[in-house]
Amino acid sequence: DTGVSQDPRHKITKRGQNVTFRCDPISEHNRLYWYRQTLGQGPEFLTYFQNEAQLEKSRLLSDRFSAERPKGSFSTLEIQRTEQGDSAMYLCASSSPRQSRGNEQYFGPGTRLTVT
Amino acid sequence: GQNIDQPTEMTATEGAIVQINCTYQTSGFNGLFWYQQHAGEAPTFLSYNVLDGLEEKGRFSSFLSRSKGYSYLLLKELQMKDSASYLCAVRSLVVSSGSARQLTFGSGTQLTVLP
Image 1: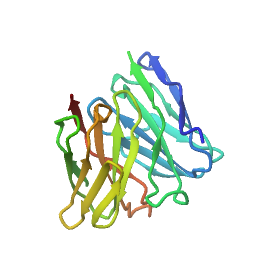
Image 2 (image 1 turned 120 degrees about the vertical axis):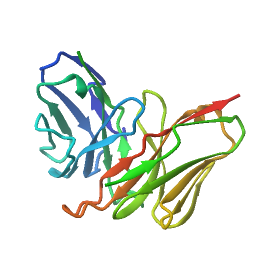
Image 3 (image 1 turned 60 degrees about the vertical axis):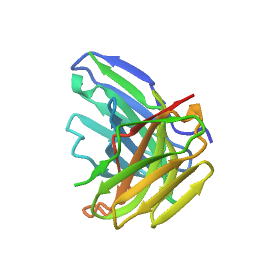
Image 4 (image 1 turned 135 degrees about the horizontal axis):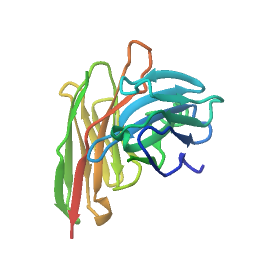
């Protein structure tokens, strides 16, 4: 088990550009989550997938944000027309209710986005 | 809506015991989690409580009182490596979608362990 991986680890982009992040969950975890974290704050929920179905989206997820999990394995998060306020750490997590009592989420190392 | 409160900062001495409190207000409570996060790293899972009482795991213990909307994380025999942010997170039922997966995090308690 190699844990949750995310790519890239760091991304610097200019305002107005599009960016895409990838998350590979722990194998056999059917649930995948995206969060955003800014300095001094806890992670904020963005969206949740069960297998390939996107079951929940936060109101934080504006129309510029889209997430996919086409085959129920890896997921991508795209931000279009980036703004400086999008600068944050984007965290991916995965879980499986079959593997733990609490269905706790396991986090990846995150992608740090800086919009200049 | 949901509201989670925890102290911003705490300081303790190596070898001591520290208790980090968390209070929450939520509808449809479905579990409380504690995570540890070192600077620049991802949160790592520490403990889970869904029923009232104490859960012990090595040097770490977590307590829950659902009627009071209160939890604490107890760290014993503090070590320098315990210096980190400790995040309290509540899972709640999302009635509209039937999903019970969403976690709401507090802002975290930055613990500094001094020699």
